[in-house]
Image (cartoon, rainbow, N blue to C red; front, side):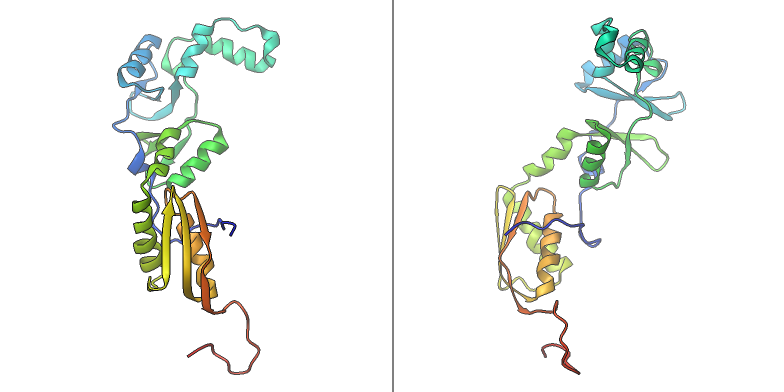
Length: 238
């Protein structure tokens, strides 16, 4: 059966970036030098660092890619679009974080679901996001690698969340008659539920669980509540 993708129910728990972000976050000030930025990146083993003002306000982010522009030197104008060439050369001549940084930094809140953060990265074309608190101050960094770690969850952990979370807590249905198997993140649901509409909702909930790669369902049902019965006074099974 082809997997069904949909928005998760508001009742379903999803991990947030706060749970997977790298912290404490290293930061540099806009007045810090090129050399200092390199030292921070090297000492922390990271590839980018937020740039803040003296008061702690997030101004942007500077990455190894920004720093490499200086090492690359002059790039022939005919290779790049004139505007892009001018911007690259201008940045290559700068020496302070406030001049080298990319601004504004792409940010997400602490309670942002991991799936939403992944979509933000893809849409913005970036490899990392700055996680900010309620006052807009950097609290951590979430990278593509952090997001991908979600898919390293064990099959046992995923199965437990399907049963205890999606089926028992969210759907509030008995697991008797429903079999859940998980193989390399692929969840297979077999058995029978009470109503036809339960199948679609359960599949959506399972798909929203972190670490689930695909959902395959061959669930049956005892009552098709998706069909409107025209019989006067019919109220479904008793």
